[in-house]
Length: 203
Image 1 (cartoon, helix red, strand yellow):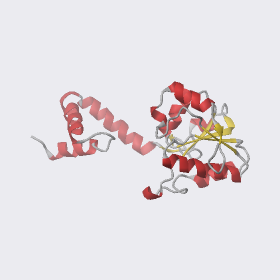
Image 2 (cartoon, one colour; image 1 turned 45 degrees about the horizontal axis):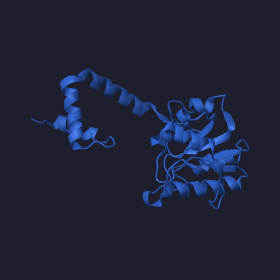
Image 3 (cartoon, rainbow, N blue to C red; image 1 turned 60 degrees about the horizontal axis):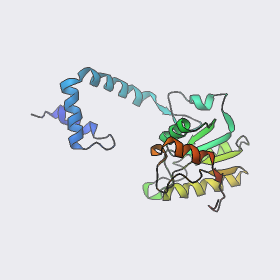
Image 4 (tube, rainbow, N blue to C red; image 1 turned 90 degrees about the vertical axis):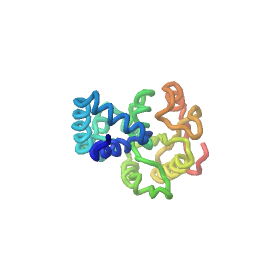
């Protein structure tokens, strides 16, 4: 028989993507029946992560420190700046390619209907970096969706205003695809064959 606390646990688990009521119930019962210690550890780590993981002040990716290790590294090429939509996209590129530049994470893409404009994507911070003269190439690695292409167009205009070369990932990334789900070979090829990106959206 269900209890109020069990119902709360099931409802809490439903915040995870792809987890519906039945799956959440199975997870909750599994933790209570067989993994109580694992559940306690999950609770501790989850609470700590929610409290301690923030966003890097320079690239906006997830970080436990004000500036993440990638941005602090002296081994990265600071003239190359790759713009991605999410930390998952950043990780996909980092894993599949030999890219040694820096990143800027938008944490979304331009979508007025969802209330995501230039300010929400941190484009004021990006513009400040482009105006500093350190960045020579802005690699636009937004996803090839309608919103991703609109974002890429905006980024190309931003780069052009500051005299920075803008490039886009080459073919091999399917229209409507998501970077984090591409196989490593496809992503590596597209990244290595990136094309110049102009403010009018044409290559």
